[in-house]
Amino acid sequence: MPFVLDASVTLNWAFGEEEHPTAEHALEKLRRDEAWVPSLWWFEVRNTLIVAERRGRLSEADTATFLHGLSRLGIRTDREPGEASILALARQHRLSVYDASYLELAQRQAFAIATLDKALRRAAQECGVAILGEM
Image: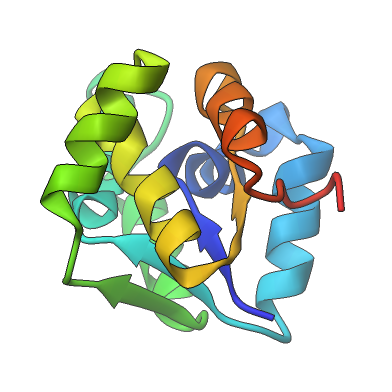
């Protein structure tokens, strides 16, 4: 079954020294299934990679290799966010609008969510959204 993939899990894959069981589980699941992301995921991932380059954590070649690998995975972009729902979730759970967009997508599609973000995990639990790795 598809799941929602957030940037925290995706970026964990880019920085091998920060392995996390949830991120590893999500990558394994993605090899046989598909993940959905809100459109902001594209910007979040790439911005973090550029910042990592500036800090000397990644080279330009590392970024290119990582993005090429991502392009080969079954990651689908949702382009129909529920604006009112996102704002309501952000207010109710004190989330950023960015994090609320992942939660809204998971709720709307009835998908589990893969995240390392503590506030997003808490909000997902409160909303009855399954968390990948805890199912």
